[in-house]
Each structure stands twice: as C-alpha cells, then as structure tokens.
Length: 503
Figure: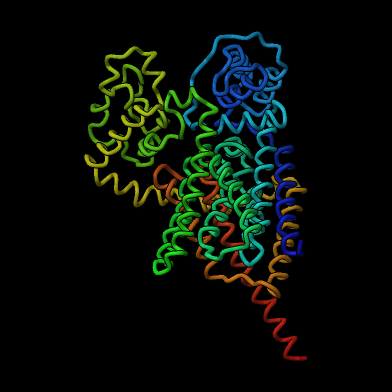
C-alpha cells in the first residue's frame, strides 16, 4: 500500500479516535431514539421479542426511570443498564412503530448484537460501518479521487469543535450513530457509486470482480443509510446524473452502451435485493406502512417557521381542539400541528380513538397531511412563497453561522489535539499527492459543491438546524478544507518548479 492510501486510512483512524473520546466525554440522551428505538432493540436482543416489537415491561421500566429522573444522558444510560440485565418479567407486546422508519431499529439491533446491549454499541457499530466504507473506497480508487477520504475526515473532525457537540441540548439530538448523524455515513458510499458510474474503463476480469465486491459493500451501506435517514436520498442524484451522462456519451457505441446498461441494472438489482432483505427483517413495520421516514408531515409542520402561522381561517378549517386543545399553533406546535390535521381527517370521524392513534404516522396519515400541505399552499400563496424563498433560506444561513461559532473552551483537549493532527495529516496527504497525482480543483469542487447544493433540499422541504442538518454543515467544512488543499497543492507545485529551475 502506497503512502497516500496509508494516509487516507490514517485520517479515518484519527477521526475514529476523536469520536471515541467524544462518546466517552460527552454522553448524550439519544433524544430521537431513547423512547422507542432503544427499548425495541433491547426487547429483541435481550428478551427475544420479534425485531420491531417492544416488550411492555421493558417499556414500563424505561418510562419509570424517566418519570423519576427526567430524560438526560444518565437516566437513559440507567434505563438501558437496568433493562439489559435480562431479569425483567416478560410483558405484553407493544406494536407501536417509530415515525423515523425501519432503518434505525434494524441498525440498533445489529449494533447491540455485535457490541452488547449498551448505548455506546450504536456509536461503535456506526464507526465500524464507516471503517468498512473507507476501506472499500481506498481499495477501489488510487488516483486523485482518493482526496475525498481525508477530505471527509478532516471536515468531520471539525464538527466536535462546533456547537453541534459543545452545546449539550444540540448534542443530545445528534449522537454519533443516531438518526440525525447517520447521514454522514452515506457520503463515501455515494461518492463511490458516483465514480463507478462515471468510470467507463473496462478493467481486467479479476479486478472487475473485486470492484463489484467493493461496490456491493457500498450499496449495502448506502441502503441502510437511506432506510435510517430517508432525507439523505439526495445523495443518489449525482450517481443517477452520472449514469445518464455516461449512457449519452456512449450513444454511438452500442457495445459500450450495453456494457453500461448491464452495470447500472446489476447495481439496481443489488440495491433492490439489499433493501428487500433489510425490510423483511421487520415485518410489523411493513404491515403498518412505517418503512420510511415521514416526508409530508415534516413539510407541513414547517409552516410554523412563518411568523403569521396559522394563516387566515386555518384554525377553523382544521378545528381539532377536541383532541388537540391548543389547535393549530406556532408556539410549541411542531408535530402536534400534523396531529391536528390527522384528527379532523374525514375518514377518522368514524374510527375509534385507538384506531386513529394506531394509524398515526402511517401511509394514510401522510396522505392527510400532504393534502393539507397543498391546501395551505394554494390557499395562501403569499405566505407559502415567503416561507420557501425567505424564512427557510434564512434558517439555512443561521445554521451555517451557528456552525462557525467554535467553542474551544468546552472541547476536551484530546479532541483539539486530534483535530490539529488531522489537519496536519491532510496537508501532508495533499503535499504528497502534489508530486504524483495532484487533484483537479474544478471537477473535485464541482462534485463536492453539487452534493452540498443538493443537501439544501431536505432543509427546504422541512427546516435547517444544527441538529437536523449535520451533513449540510459537513459540506461547508469540506469546501473550506478543499480550498485550503488547493492552496497547499499550488504552493507545493510552485516550490517544486522553482527547485527544478535552479537545477
């Protein structure tokens, strides 16, 4: 293995070290996962419940701890440790499905089977998957595209220096391995798939088999990422564009075009197989229609970003105060605005309260809030345009500003040291590459910038914040790092040119 590939792997190891220090020094409450995902995984791993179902007594133990101590890192850890002992009598089965989809229960279960029924297991499993993805990328690409590995990890190592980690209330929302942090795991797989689709060279048969194994590994990880964090589906857009472009480029070469069709169809078949295998592991989520995360719900509740919400007569149109006392509201409304629409949904008027609750966040729920979303948009176009063209972009800018407010006094010294070493390694990598395979700034920046631009889509559909837009913050720091890499590479090449002239 040449020095560049060694440095690329070392960049992951430095990030993993910083992440492990953060896990140890900054325990979190796992806010999106503590109430359903974690009890679901423990119910399966420790008490033998079918994956996706919750043991009622396990859930009761969690709720008892939270009622007594509140929800905080210590209480969540205590609840997990108590339930993980395995001495809680079996209770009734709870079939409530989580609104964030099928992926997180699958991942949490896998993590606790590999590393034991502990909160930290999800972080360790996340780092393991990231290591596998990194090795697959390094094993496949040895040219200037290798820059994306240290580029990713120098940007990720910057994130613990920001309020994403230094602010406890934000950190609780973005645990390493948690739902809102999971999207960054898809970055290298998405790049790997993109470059594979762009590459039109025909490798030798043995190398081709190896490439397919590496691509299959990345497709499996990417499938899991999208099941956990469906908002990161935008990461597939560059690969789809690359596939269309390469087919168009080969339009006059039938042999090459057929080869590309086979490549793309094989990749699609692998993805379908992986998706089907993972979905089949949680049949009750499939039965209830909770396979993916919510799209229309988040789009609808984002109306609270507009200062005039609720608009006009909407409180009368969605008169839900019988079930949601405050009705549609801006202050603290959040998810309950979606629930308000659901309770007044016409088919629900003939259903029992329990049936309505059981169908919450299911496919029919999404249909109800989708209809409400478009009703609001067409009924109040001025406010809707202001929301999407002004208030949401302002939130994006505020998120970037917040991510630049480093709070080094709150950062453990070891993480600061590892970040400094990561930066030094990145400069070393770029300098070494400058002599052998310098990266081309324009296409590299184009790829990175395209991903960054696409990452705005979830923030415009829903909303941007430091705890929901970690990938967007990552791209910002990656762009900063890439600009510095270009300066380092230019300086290195200039110095070499001057040295050669003197000779």
